[in-house]
Image (cartoon, rainbow, N blue to C red; front, side, top):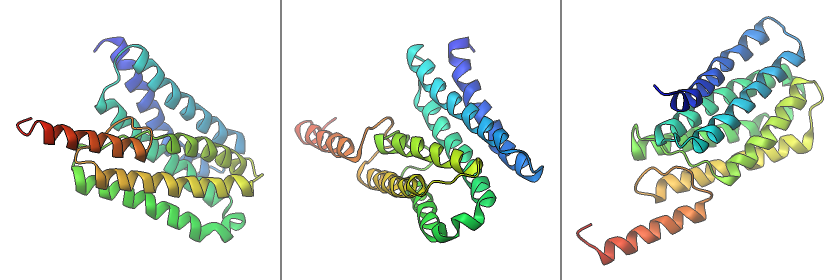
Length: 202
């Protein structure tokens, strides 16, 4: 496999190996800086796998879907470990966090039922913004200085992004990749319907 094709995959798999590293660090009672190091390493791999794949022209739907699935595992593991580390402080937010998690599960289940193995990879603006706020929240939790505003923003944006994803999967007849927002999904679906009406044989 050529290097421009292989290297973005290596970055994704590197992030995949970091997911269980959070649990190992937790059970070994590791210092806070180690969690932050894992988190930042995963973020940089997440940023550069997409940048390099697009620059080298090797970004494919398969890579984007793999990237999304690994992101879910990576941020899920880091988030759960952060919750365990700050369980007492997070106690008042357990129900909102549970609702956010359930919406994420519903988002993935709707896509699975709707499209089967050909999963969408929306990469919406709300998801990118949610990722940024989530990283800030995780860092504050790992360092033992949790932020109320960051946590509230994480919950709100997580719910909003999952809602956009659910609606997109319900609306679009086929799995989409790299769609900025639900409004772009509506535009794509409307254009497809108009094209089908104008060209019934297509």
